[in-house]
Image 1 (tube, rainbow, N blue to C red):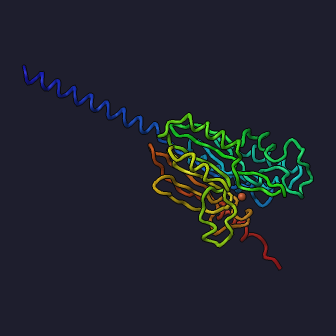
Image 2 (image 1 turned 90 degrees about the horizontal axis):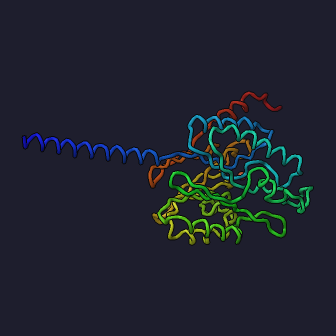
Image 3 (image 1 turned 90 degrees about the vertical axis):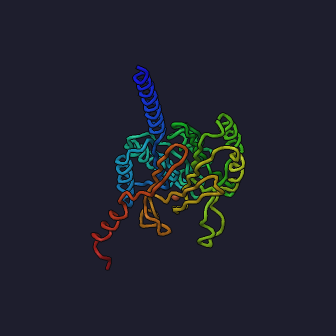
Length: 308
Ligand SMILES: [Fe+2]
């Protein structure tokens, strides 16, 4: 009798333990997710760009991440353009990106700034000037959202100088917004930042180029996030693929590009592609995905008649 009772208790404990472990596994699985980061798309009707972008969209849909983040330079190019041409480019991007089977979060790039260059026929009074066209098509140029316990911050890394050039900078207004945005977070919440102009990059050291092309006040954001759980900075602009891990603190990935060198070939010998990030609990892994555009581009080049 006593043995029977003991056996029942033992079985009950085993059952409870099993139920707990199943629930725990379920929670971990539910918290895991993937997302794609596509940067420097440079969409335009020419050079086979729509075909190349469609191949990227098809590849993303096949991989089926939870959502897509873009890294800016959605189109090429609104900086110098007139309204008609720039509208055509933005409409084409909006139409094509509706083909993603999941939500797309867009980031602003320098080529998406409307009519900022002196050679543009439009004036700075135009309602679409600078951020206006991007805002009309896609909404705010900086914002945040949450996905399964992770916090995503998409930043506007672009200003315009008095001599009508673009520059990598976070505005004072944006920094004030960021401070408020993160103040609502638990300090353990993993944070991902998306920026077009890199906040940190090895390019100038590797190529010997001048140190331009970085956000001039990026350190303010790093300082602001010092006591938070910044996990990853995703960046575009330089069509350069790199990864770094800083002081056991945060990772950064510069995500190559969809367009390569203006759709003509690789840039910095980086194959056209995009980044796929797999989040597992508090950590992540990533890979650079070739969506097949290089092979297609080379095939096209081969089939062209030889120049005489
Ligand atoms: Fe670009």
